[in-house]
Image (tube, rainbow, N blue to C red):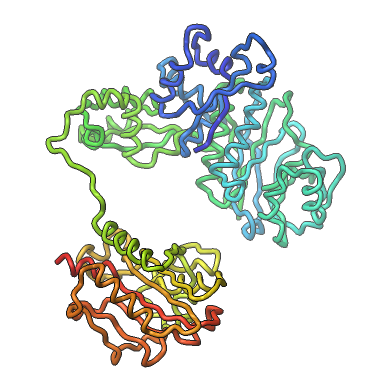
Length: 604
């Protein structure tokens, strides 16, 4: 959750709160009602030196919801809170499209490193020291949050009066780039750029990894071949923003188009407050591949919600008109055109959502805002107690497994907890098992080979644990945790397969005994002990060595475990080839079984 620091005196002035009579406790309550939290109150060093401290150096540290990017600066926070306090109406954002809009051309070669670019212009802006600093701070906050440390999105802002459109965004070899980076005095060649940054701009050094190994760097030029920025690292000194800047060119480069638009709209909405024509920004024509698109899009969008759904979620009985009035306090207004022309169902509410509210994705978000505006304390006061009382309880399977964990630990085995994601090789080829294509749940967008799939066995993790911990023998370890099962249309007693995710967790138990001589007698004894702990009579479980062909174990030293003639797992001596695959030098015996199936059988 991001935190912003707002000067108390400035904040009270903008919200029209009396500095003398409006207490900090009252402001804390206001924050709670609005859906944010006053986390801390800090003072600057100057105030600490004063005997009579004032509010001028008092800073309110306020925790902002992670999806409310519009609240990450003084301007956005004040605008939203003033509307919440019904001191202002929700602002209407406008865009101006000149007859000949300024163009930014994007060349196709940027696709290999940072393919997306959007832009906008703020005209006739008037900064003072506080608003100028807020403009810089907002970019930092966005970079840390939605921009994911500039990996997904990066922001460049420039004094438009110092550069000449049209602009060109392209990717070229580093040695072809020459410019003076921000806050530096000498010109730098792109080939030496990373070295210069490490020496003279350490605050952005951590971002170098985003482009350092690329054969090309992204760069934005004006028509005079002046470098505006080398995203996502640094802007150029030539076009830097100053307190006296009147016209600002904002360029956003990104990997994600949606996030790029959210960032652009957030900056334009917050600081169009200071333009001569309030809440207005100028459109830029972005041309790529012969296709023109115009940014920013500051128009409201329509979101539908059901009155019955909102009332059900909140436990209220509000009318359509009451809901509309509550939503006005959250910057959301009624879309009267859609409601009048297209809505015959009185239960459907068509709402107009401003570009600053990118967090509104579903009618559940609308219900949340109604709840905030209505007041959650007020909801609790109106709610009736439920007709039945329930008591929370321990999940039975967890209680069952905790019993096993305690007893196994008392028997001298050490519990380990391994990663749920692992590599294909560890689960299959390293265990001398063939991929069946059915049990593996692939993880999307996996970058590292060691985290390719959801584990289908606990045994691989235990062997890797032994490989990483070379200590005195014998070593006795176990794990009782979940594996992932791909259902693919199969049926389970507890789940209709093919529902929402098509996969499920199963609780497994596995143990490994490593020693200079690790025969079946050790792990067999542990299995008998587990069954005794669970209260399973000896006649109910048996072993099948003839039909066991699990190549992770040594032939004639392996067997399936059967409970009430149902196969639940396998135990045996680990095959030498498997030991070699996991870099183990001493023999191991192991067992692994589906403890969840054991639980289900015992509770039938």
